Length: 333
Image (cartoon, rainbow, N blue to C red; front, top):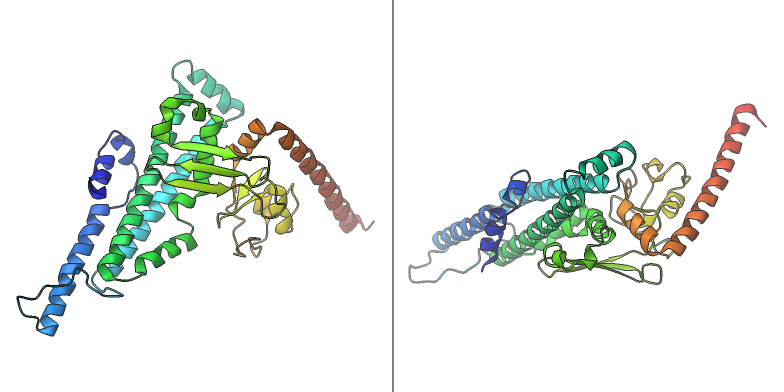
């Protein structure tokens, strides 16, 4: 079965009630744009070059920058990808917020479990979100590959780089790592019923050298995420993902941005740069990866205790220095 048919079946499948509320790649529509482009450009070239009726036209339009579809194609696709990334982020954030709820919200959830299996509902939504992001990512890859084939260009490949620069590359989202950690924290890696629909997630060497999270998505796409902090070279502790996508320990990220741990990562100045890619302004929208932190707490208790003691000790030390400086500044001694 061709991917276009598979994608249409997915949109009209069991999760249609969910997909009606969100955006997806208009795969068929974009495919028609390319088909029209190929026909129009070939016809125009035929008229210009006085090709006789017996000649066979090329399968590609051979326009490096095609005036027929570039504006509509890339503008539409960028809007769709942005909407998909935004929807995925908001839904995953909502799902994980419920999973790690505290206080009154946690009490209300326990009360609701008397009438409904809340954990099962969260797991089902996690499955839907994994499939949602995977299918749309495949659709984008397929349509860009088709664009380059039709035009004999690298514009589709360049668009992928633009997506990465705009931080909307779907399968490189820190929220996908959080979903993987949620999968492991829920114990779904030990439940056979969920392996096919949710995919498979595993963590290797979590508190040793080269800690890695592997995600095998439903379409057999395998992703690997390195969980090593590039600053301390240990497994990320109390991790934050910066806007550029790079993940660091909270203490390490604060140190790199010259702010104190108790002030937090988001208190970093606007001019602060990512220690890896050197991009400016990536701290303000940093994501606290709570599920990944919880995974480390559950699976590496000794390492987690050692790191939490060290972080708290450093926080107390920094706090004392800060308030001593404030006292000297205010009263002069």
